[in-house]
Length: 396
Image (cartoon, rainbow, N blue to C red; front, side):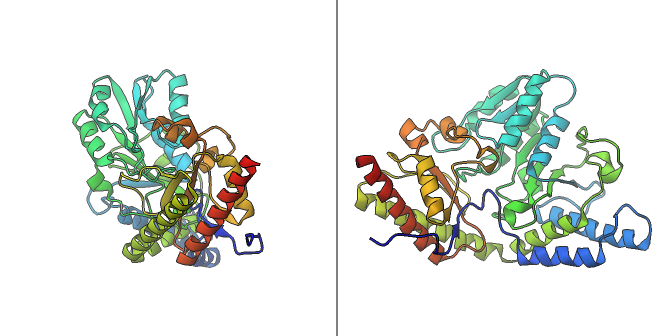
């Protein structure tokens, strides 16, 4: 049997961790380096030029995300260093100084879970909304939780491990009726599916540029008009003091360019990624049937992001398979990149009630704008070979 070697081209299927920089983003950043490098807070001509680029990016990103930017009381977009920064600003900034219940789901990103744990240390009771076996939060349990004095709810829009989309608009309606702000982490949805901030009805929304082929080091928190979180940083007037510090114009321009490139061809891109994801899962399913190997697609019956496949190969160890695939030139992950240093099983899959053999054999594969059909076909072949090798080793 022919062995897959590292001399073959590498196949990157870990776009939920980070994405390669889009050409449009790189070009916009280079233009800033040459023509808009000044401090955007400076009053001279060079500073004003940088300020125009910064504010054009802010307005453009907010528009694409469905914010109200035209009324006399517009929504606000606050630039941050990324999704973790934005999530912490949302939770720690909006929970309030007086201890009151904060509600998060059991499947949130580590940056939300960590911020919730910090709030608990500060005296805020934290309630966790459970999740069903299909990966969807138990929205029916939310009204009972909201009956208690609550200052904030945070529910992700699309799960970073399973790709399962969550009923955030329905939750926002329940929260609005109770007079409680709802924050959503949309880091994995922005640049993958259309987002309409106004239609969602949420109070705050997080995005991260490097998840949609923008630069690392920048994200944003979109805030509904009138909502002002307590800042985590002090000592500057930038961004109305909510997130002070000199803004990086180059990163903002790159973020806007990447999101604008997605907006331009999002219908075709979404359809293509969904087709490739389905092909990927179908071919692996066919292999599993032929090889007599169990195979599970997490969240298969639920609405999902078009580019994410979270798969289990019961009977195989996920860490061993992950390393075998790395040697075979296939990049994937065993969960959130922000928790990749941990050997613990996925908290998301554990919350879904997965049995141990499924939990211990699950890997995440995520596609990007540059993923091709030939990548998918080759990846399936390499995964099949790796599974065969690991099964032989177990029998030996």
